Length: 137
Image (cartoon, rainbow, N blue to C red; front, side, top):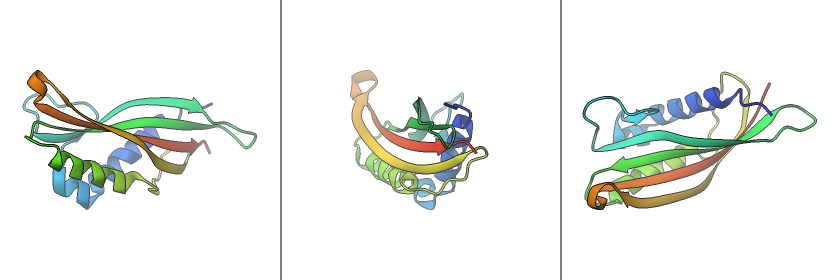
């Protein structure tokens, strides 16, 4: 197994989200690996947890990454967050991402969870989980 492509995959996902006009049309540049200090936008995206399993075979090293992209808002409803979540899913599923290391075999939608969090449930959060199969080159 190789975890060596994890950073390359994350960078490619981030770049894809930042460059997609549908995503940026909704959230602008509020896409983060870690929240910035100071005031946080009302609607933003974070790159979240990841788990990785070995997918090596006789042809070489590979891995299956299960990663989360979260949409968070303090807006009064889920509607805007769900629109952003749909745009994120549309741009990542079957995306042809170029990695700095290795090769992307594919990206697939796995599941999503929409819930209320924070004080009195005022924050809406949608966690989108994707599967990405990568091979080391």
